[in-house]
Image (tube, rainbow, N blue to C red; front, side, top):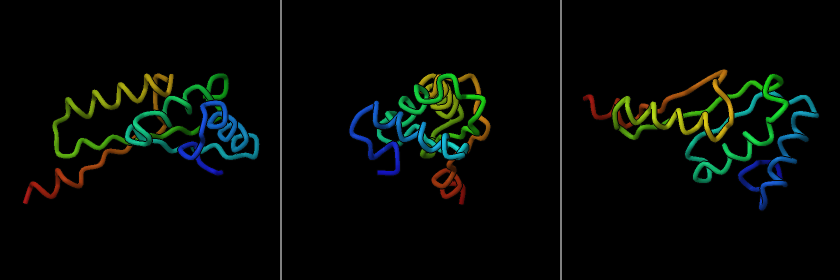
Length: 101
């Protein structure tokens, strides 16, 4: 088992993240869509006391909706990740860009 999403329990998910960080991995990739937010929740708990050692990213994908939805998703991600900032944020614009033509 190598991903937090494959973990059966919260404790196992946190252990996976701690083991990765202890091995020198610091790039933590997530998204509000992964496992209905569970991955972000578990990652937030795993990063308690270690946040400064992680390069944390997450993604929002508005599926063609507006900026208000994107901001809401971002705020919810920050809450689940238990942090006040991301080191990198990505926004999926596929459907938005497809609708512009």
